[in-house]
Every structure is written in structure tokens, then in C-alpha cells.
Image (tube, rainbow, N blue to C red; front, side):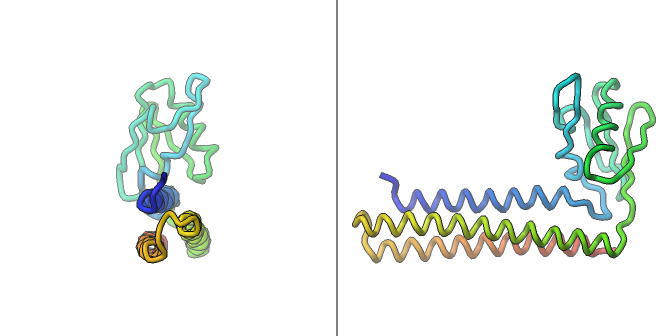
Length: 187
């Protein structure tokens, strides 16, 4: 039989997963500052196989607003460059034959506001995901109480613990969102 403690551990794991997914999504949002996370999601058609960029090239931050991408196989430069151009980054790569450089343009005020709106939407989706986990686990605990597998007092205690876990997860998500918003609005 699955115990309420198992449900709480599962809830904590799933809530942490929602936060991690949010962190990855927000890391891919372009700010005025270079970050290797901007290109981690890019898939390159390498010898007919879809391959993540970080598996065929080293990606480094060359300057505050410039990424340097150096494919390990010089023959992959054209494929990497094409993948960057067709991605949703909106940055034109420059290629010197061995290294591809991505210079990040400064963001306009309107673009910053658009990015903040999209970021807030993702943060809210993460909050909703955490609340859905809470509701799912609440239902499981209440079902165990109704089936007389656990006492009413135990059920109440587990539900309180679940709420505290939910509150801390939502606070962590909010903190992550606020940090990204500050980064986006920074000129």
C-alpha cells in the first residue's frame, strides 16, 4: 500500500520538477546578456541525425553580449549555423571558418516588456502545475482517509505538510520569476 508519506515525497519531487522546468525555460529567454542556456535547446541536423548543439560543439560566453560556438567537427559548422538561423533566437551568426559567434543585440523597451509578459505567463503555468500536484495528492490522501486507511488527524497533518510544501514551491517559483524579470528589465 502507498502511504501518505510516499504521496508527499512524490508531490515534492513533482513540484521540484515544475520549478526546474521553469528555470530551464526562463534560461532560454534572451536578455541583453549572453548565456549558454540560450542555445542549449537548438537541434542540429548532423549527418542526418537530430543532435543537440551541446553534443557537437563547445559553447562559451566570449564577452558580455557574445557567445562563441566551436564545433568539434569543422564539417558541422554549416549545419550549426543553419540550425541557429532557423531557430527562434532571432540572431544572425557570424562564421570565421572555425568558430561561430553570436552577438546579442540590445533589447528595445517594447521587446523587454513582451519578454516579461511571456515570462510571467510561464511563471503562472509553473504555479498552476504545482497546484495541480497539490490537488492530486490531496485527493489521494482524502481517499485513504475515507477508506479508513489513515485517521482523520493523520490526514489533517499530511494535508498541512502538503500545503507547506506547496507554499515553499510557489515561493521558489515566484523568486525565480522575479529574478528573471529584474534581469530582463535591466538596461
